[in-house]
Image (cartoon, rainbow, N blue to C red; front, top):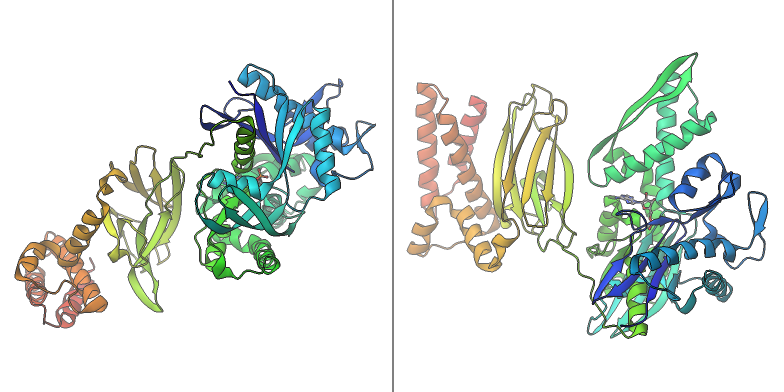
Length: 587
Ligand code: AMP
């Protein structure tokens, strides 16, 4: 059996320990299922040493007996005071490392004396040396110090052939780093690095806290910032809300009995939309993008020379971060390795190589396909009813659940059709439709009534799609059992589905007759699909229409069907006529 050499991500906010065992990378749980140890150290009132969650909890009420973010002080000579006693930054870091070592030993059932520890690419020699010393104080021989972006690159592709340039975008709780790396065989070289030591997800939390304070002031005329306990509760609630907003379009920040005012309890309950939240954090994201460009010019590379973007750090789960990076660099960022654990995993891979273990690949279950729905939007500068809205992007680890809000488009709209697609094309009609349903009976409201659609994909490829009217909770859902496996022979099925959509039930006849499948290019194709959809709708309307209306509908349907049958025909007049009729009948 090879020697236990662990990989440690000694982070500003959180730390993790991992090891390669039996060809797999394992991030070792620190408590129950939790694999993240807050990088906080404290001394309890009885003198007991606290490391991790308990120290983090103590910090709120007794900051003088607790130390956090010690990483920022590494390499400094001045001491850090905790409970009235001075410690060197190395000693405080050693307490975190020692705890991780104990956890690893208990988990592995044997001694752990060696470690690979990661540091930011910009760390100076003094900071690296201090990290090494911290390891030694904790009883660990630091067999190698590696750069965090290097570790991330190792976790993403430990055995990738060929040479690539990657941008490692690392947004943690309190720090932001971006590095440009060159990946060549097994060698990862950091070409340039940039960042901000005081920017991260914690700032996002602060924005939500400020929003809540403003709300309390406005609603109750009360200044909650004067109460440390209320502030501590708000901060925790803000982080929870922020995390929820990564997957949901709305969240309610609710804290009962937050404060008292003249003996009367004050409850907080305020809704935040993702849109509002994104506006709050946009300046921070813009700042990170500036840093990205600085790093690129430092590496003498242009945007187009970047092959991939690797996401590291919990705050990169924020959809705005991923969206803005993709818009700015034109590459969809990779997020398939857990961004909180990615650096520790890379450190473990490096440790495994040193210990002589076989280099593993990080196996994660991801969806190979993108799933989404369609909505009215803008396609190439024109309004278009079938714009594809991806909810679950390909390479997202599963299980996953994502929600988006959609809004009714006209006053009094009581039903919405939800089409479920798999694909990548911005025009949903070029993607594969894998299901559809209707949510009917929405309340009579002006346009803009929110319907929240949730896609949940489990490890077995079962996709559940639910739409819920936000104000009433009225919901409808479908389950697509084989959302992933059904595409085993993807190309064939994609082609078949596309043709089915294009030609409706007449696909076979047309194919037999050798008709041009494009039916007059993209516009013609769209008209045909619209016509097929309209016919379907009209046929549904027939069920409830009065005798006279039914006659008109049948005529309209016939006319449009005739048009569809003749590839030379101009569909537009028949299509408009039937659309007008349906509009008139208010279906
Ligand atoms: P790290 O320092 O890499 O562990 O990142 C921690 C930061 O990521 C904290 O600010 C967390 O609140 C934040 N974070 C964790 N999960 C999410 C999420 N799903 N969406 C947004 N931020 C998150």
